[in-house]
Length: 230
Ligand SMILES: NC(=O)c1ccc[n+]([C@@H]2O[C@H](COP(=O)([O-])OP(=O)(O)OC[C@H]3O[C@@H](n4cnc5c(N)ncnc54)[C@H](O)[C@@H]3O)[C@@H](O)[C@H]2O)c1
Image 1 (cartoon, helix red, strand yellow):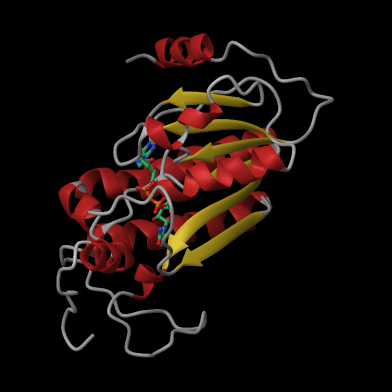
Image 2 (image 1 turned 90 degrees about the horizontal axis):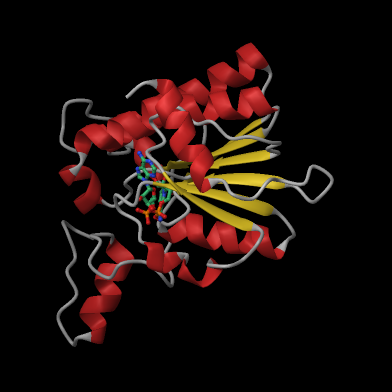
């Protein structure tokens, strides 16, 4: 698809113009996901205008249904690996888009690698173009099968690049490296957050992550599955 067509399709969804004198403007990729939707709620509560971008590959509109009609929120359904054109100012780019559970990224290995590489490139490009601050959600998985417990930030990890989980681990490792390259080369203010297991409302019970698996097994009176030696 030519770039001009893509730009037009985004502008059509952007009915409201941002008032430059109003509060900060945040772009949240992965806004229809578990964490992205909670972040969106928090930013709106703090007076931000939020543009949520998501292709709904693992997220759900149900996570942001309650924001319908909120004049400070706009949703754009788009794959962030494609060119991101947004009119108006942007103060913060929060790059949360990525399949995140083992079930999802084992099913979507190429999309996972693309969102960490091409998607992070587009999100960083947006931040650079707008002079915005940038934050990316990385993961404890960048340590792979760690040889040190618990992992300090100074530990570089033990990752199998060719194993099935390599798609997620290496996607996030590349994303961290690209973020630091943009920071060093273009002086963009960047933040990398390595999240370990989080859980809470809006998480899918069957998404394959350990805490929701424990909770749903407990709720249905089933034995709790422990892998390996736990
Ligand atoms: N929840 C955790 O415990 C945890 C742990 C470590 C890292 N993270 C990271 O935090 C972020 C959010 O995770 P989550 O738990 O909310 O997962 P999630 O699957 O609920 O949310 C991810 C969102 O990104 C969207 N997305 C994926 N690829 C996209 C693309 N190419 N274009 C547009 N949107 C796309 C999905 O549709 C989904 O809405 C991810 O980057 C994940 O790697 C989460």
